[in-house]
Length: 304
Image (cartoon, rainbow, N blue to C red):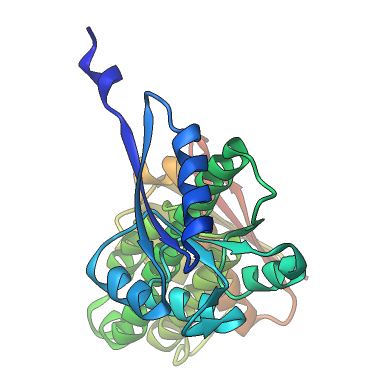
């Protein structure tokens, strides 16, 4: 016999209901929905004070929450439960006449709602499982956003160190794990833009602000120096009319660039910002990248 198949998953539920008859109905529905692979551990609380106490003392997979309790009503009930344990999914149990209120409660932190007496055991268990999965995704996004904020704050702190100690490679490579964690695109983009702004400002002051002559040759030379300081091998191939062509035979990121193209886009963003401080109308493009499995990197700077 396969012992793995004998393991029964138990969902720990905090049932918040002050009417014993209603609590029994929910327990019966859960009992009918249980299978050989799925069980429910149910604890009942009949007041908001007991709910808060239990959520502070124990971890539950889901809270089934009646809106009307002796010491709490409606919106306040969901808000207090959510504030006590924001990472625990809440499924509201509402009376038929309060269905509209149930929808509003979802805006207060509940994952879903059910009308009392109007759900089958299958609907109940499906609602519970979906609520748990949705909350897991919300919690994951919270962790990613917190990590991105921490990285942004760290970037701000290390801005001075970047100027003094040339820590560009360290800062960029430290961002890789965060950008690979599946952050929401809008959050990752905001972080990337802020990173580019900060690094561009430091590099401008460090390499270009006091240069006697700033032209395409100077700009291309600074870009090569940046990439070479990072561990790459870049050189100016040509400067003709209004175009500078830079070739890189070795990528500073190695195989990491092939796994995460964000690194190439970060460099392009930084170089574009530097060029825009020098020329009024300029475009910086990556014609080839080793990260994209080309034989070399080609950076084109074109002034219009």
